[in-house]
Length: 496
Ligand code: NAP
Ligand code: MG
Image (cartoon, rainbow, N blue to C red; front, top):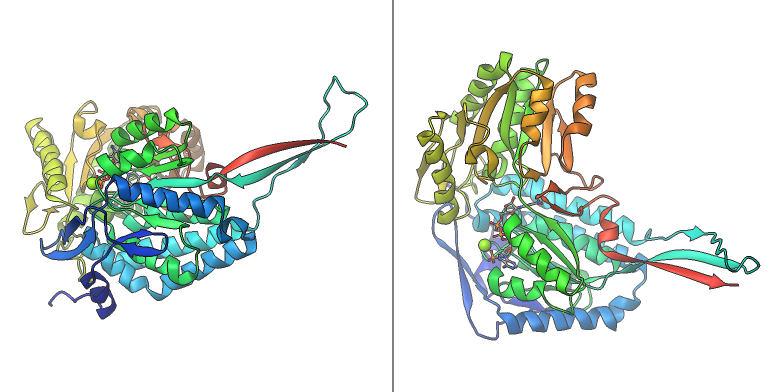
């Protein structure tokens, strides 16, 4: 069967010159430079987008500042902000197929999965945050003030939008990571300048078109494409930016965090991970095998919370390892515009080489390559790989590989399982596979990670906050908790 071609609407979007999005207009970069995008599954040219520099970023921040300080947007009532978010979600629903195809062409991920997962989660999250727009309350309190015993006071707090948000995102979920930042910014009344990864700007630029169509005032959302080391760094240290929110590597997150501190810019960091999957003695093995395979191979392993370290009770170790390998061996790799393909390519040659280096290192260390272990082209493919009998102190176990590579070890006791799970610099997610409620509840508080999933993995929902312990980040996205990341909490005391 030949690979389906993208829809006419998608082709129309990528065949026009695509600019930066500033003040509700697509514009060229000051330098006139463009960024050429190729399909990671085929190497074929996909589109050209304007490639921004520092002066473009300055224009975008000025536009966001103006929109925040003095505009229709700053005077808009919560109800209208709610309605605009609903409108934007409806437009994403209408153009869901285009958005999903852009993700596929630009990132290599499955178009069908992107429509069902990435785009749908964006729509759901926009609607969830739309509900919050009208519920951003403070509280009333009764102060005591010991030095003024006879005076009367009225004390209350209010939530105010934090201001101009600077957002920088990675390439693995280009649209979803952006919406996790855009939706709370728009719900709370902030304005935003967002920089996609240079590999994957297309879906976000399409979203910008929908933001304008939905009726957002000019300057509320601005998109700047350009190199992170230039545009991203300048955005991070910009004094007119009140809040920075970043999804990417721990290394860049640390740089951004330090830059933010110079201006006391508020900061949220969603960083790397090396999430453990614990299969306990009583687990339903069929479910655990399928779930562990999904935990590592979903999105080709390019997931911050991917279940990339597997720890199995020794009694079932070989069964689970072989079961996951069998699933891996049956996966169809290829251009994921084809809905029958299970796994597309990695994002780039650089990523393919980096993942292959880890696999080769495992081989050299004497670990057992149970399946996969190879890269191939054209395109940047790595076969889904299971590596057994690795050593806990190996870089394969300690470092984020960010590809379809699972490392496996057995354990004997629950204490040992917890110790192995926590023995890592990251703490983003973990899953426990078991029906022994007592054991599960004993483990949950002991696992040092922002999320713990039981009999599922990387299952995300707008109602639950998401973020990391340890070097996996700072702050939380989603859930009620995200409101505090996009607002200042003002205390008011009135002597009456
Ligand atoms: P990355 O190199 O840190 O890049 C992420 C973003 O930061 C890109 O937009 C990049 O721009 C920009 N950037 C690079 N250098 C910068 C600098 N000096 N100042 C400001 N911005 C800069 O990460 P990646 O390799 O693309 O993404 C993979 C990483 O993201 C993994 O570690 C993964 O775990 C993490 N991640 C975390 C989560 C989470 O929610 N915790 C979710 C997804 C991914 P350019 O690419 O345009 O240069
Ligand atoms: Mg990049």
